[in-house]
Image 1 (spheres, rainbow, N blue to C red):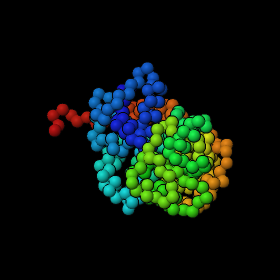
Image 2: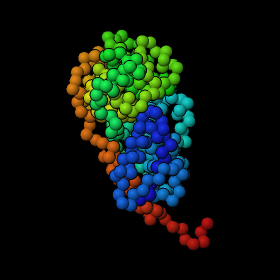
Image 3: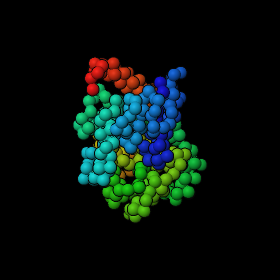
Image 4: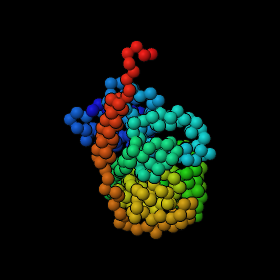
Length: 322
């Protein structure tokens, strides 16, 4: 099977970039003898086209198309994402014509069914996983990142993108809430993030640095009231760091009993839960990127087979009919 894979987002410093990089590597490692992945956004002479992000969805794909939707927050919260919703209007129309849609959780699957009117049979729920680089680091690495980014000896941690304010992430509310332990925010940032009160903002860090920052944290705090998966939470667990989170549906689904949960919007309760978190942290879900890749290959095969079946069933007009 020849798969055209739109890899343009692999340089994105946020979660979408992590997804593309990890999945692409795992797809190549798990490919069968007749499986080939070509990095391109122009799927000519391919059996299946996979867009692992919304921006790559095509209105007219020359072959069966699979699209990954990480969430549909800009459809659920139109008042907060008005520009994004308008920008992606045609992309969502393209998604509705995709042969298969991949989502990371059943929570997102329900949103896709409701918001885009896509049948459950066309949706594949394929979870994400911590990257292999996310594992507990030793004290020398922890000390090095602590010195490099001027981190306190003990701190609560938040990880994500700080390129523009996203109300559903609740970062500003988290920063403003009273707390008894310093708060560190890690991720690509713009000036507004550095204006948040009484926090340490590292900006973008390397994967090895991130693993050391996770390992050195007292706990990860996750204030979002809406998420598609919550990858930083499983990354933190993979590094041995406990997690406190608000009760967003996807986080509940992914983490189960592996995290301490508080009510949505309860920033003080979240920070207290992080403060009282203890080690050892529970292990992350056993699911790996290799598992995700094998499930994705199965989705490609199903998309190709369904498209071929449709072609065979399509009525043919008699000759001479125009």
